[in-house]
Length: 460
Image (cartoon, rainbow, N blue to C red; front, side, top):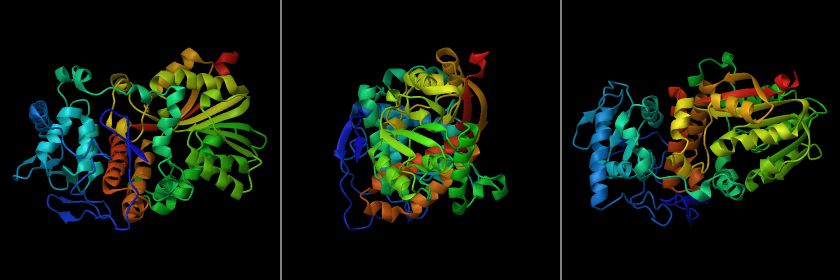
């Protein structure tokens, strides 16, 4: 497993775990994290975590930190949360029950955000500079106020000092497999520790009969994942005899359910770990003759297909390559064929404002990734293809529920994850990622859409 250094390049491999179990965060000074969250270690290996082990130092970092601290404090004073400092002061408008962000090393926190903006927010949590008993709640407050956290005049200056996307992380064909591998090839066992039995790593679709989504139980997740898949297959018209292209295999659940309908499936992935497990599952189910899983870039797909389905893969394509993505689908889609994709989306204005940004998620979770807006998908397909959006359904509240269940499961499996070789810093990073994502959906900053496309207009 590799992480990234401060410039986004590959850093040293995370060492395997020792037999000793990781310490868990409990009621320690300044925080009362949920059970199962690993406490930050007293020392962090700078070769493994160069962006986390030490806060920025030097005169420039001190000045930037003081400026960032003033801006941060000015922002949180008007937000509905509490930010508690070691000296006993508390900022924010949140009353009893509001999420609490507890500062343990405020100077290190301020230097990190002064040096790296929101990348520093995540790195400071990984390092243990601050804690939160309701991490998703704290991050939801920030997500809901993202447009106003920084004064407007200063927002225009961000591009002058914040880091840019490293060239080797752009989704050109020679880089894409490396980008995908850094996330999806971490370990099948890691993902199995917090995913359900379908090994689905995308939003589920829960029946409303299950009650409130914020309390839907773990036991409902697998069936809800299958419901999500079945709706996409239905919308793409997948049935017996259908030639189906799947872009992004995952761990094979969609291909399995399509094969069970009698479809012939050609599925492409750039993750060798996912491919291996997907092939095992497909063979065990008796569908090896119906499903081909190829280690192949989507751009290299040839042939003709009656339907194309892609679940939360467009996020890994990259802003510059959306035309190629949809042109590829357009090229291989048979006359009368249908396309069904599931895509995480963001507001169009925010998409335009952040399309050149390099974020914490890029650096640590999804190198090369970027979320589209619905308007961007409609515009790209209209301008570059004969495909047209015919139907879409937003289900962001379902993703918030899915992420809550993953988060709870991941925390409950902290010891098992540690035994796989993922240290406390990694686990804090992964928890931040899950909570950061859930906060986006709970605040409405993010949505997830099932989108159906076809060529009816072009055939008139």
